[in-house]
Length: 186
Image 1 (cartoon, rainbow, N blue to C red):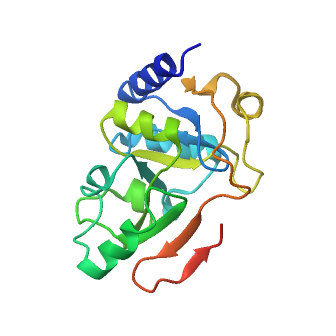
Image 2 (spheres, rainbow, N blue to C red):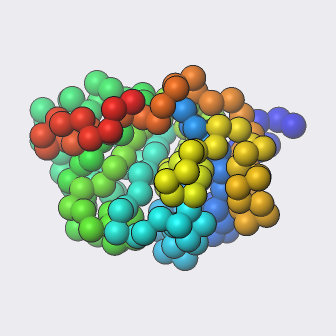
Image 3 (tube, rainbow, N blue to C red):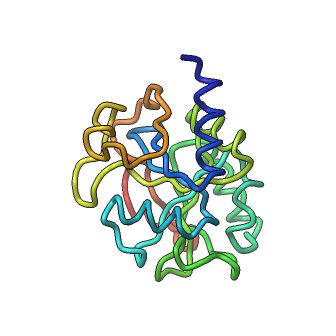
């Protein structure tokens, strides 16, 4: 099965309001269109994750994330771009237009320009950022392969994009853009 065909079908599922699984830098992720409230709420229900926690968005480049984050001062922009594409997720000031189902109770949003080739191709094909949260039930270990995704979620996903993980042992580091504090070590 060609990865190009799979990426096209995964993007099609996203555009149709679906929830999909796909490989990321360290684990399989669950994703959907971040602007589709029904899809995001369905994804959160599958994970048993409260909306108050917020989600991560991944993208193929910074321009796909710009509608979601507030203006970045030049020093912060340079610091963030020095780590992208790559396995660092940043908590950045959120745009006023970002819905609560993405940011949760926070005034920041977790975002990353992924270095994973399939995840980046998926964002390119979709035409924007997508939700990226680990493929697991909250507080359980994340899936590291499509078979585990299938076992955990059964037929409740609209598509599983098969591919290798990016080689990290742990999920990406999360840094606070305002304080540069490491919130989660990678």
